[in-house]
Length: 122
Image (cartoon, rainbow, N blue to C red; front, side, top):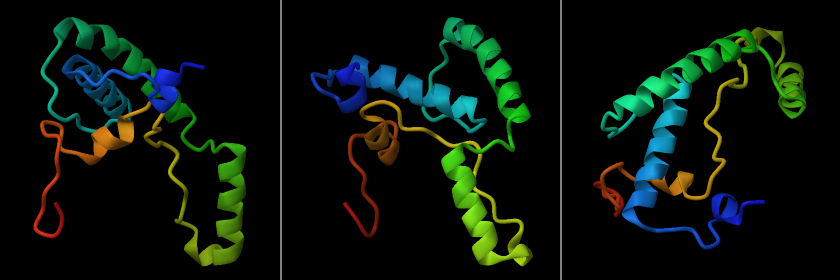
């Protein structure tokens, strides 16, 4: 188990490490077909990854109706509890998985800042 990636033990806090994390987030967002944020173009990197993304997106499309066993049980419960009239309520099949330390924090803050401020919270 890589403790740095899973729980952040001994993780870097440098600007380069944050840049790598932001590129990783943008890669995951692009994989899900979502817009990326604050990504400057790395043409060599983009060209290299585009083919992989297209293949994985096609695989995801083919498996769009597949749910893991736990999600199948939850979906079965929702179907039984809510009845047939609410047939359109389905669990999402494509999700953003937080598989590295620091992803949740990076996603909760603006891509170019280390703080969040609004009219109700700071």
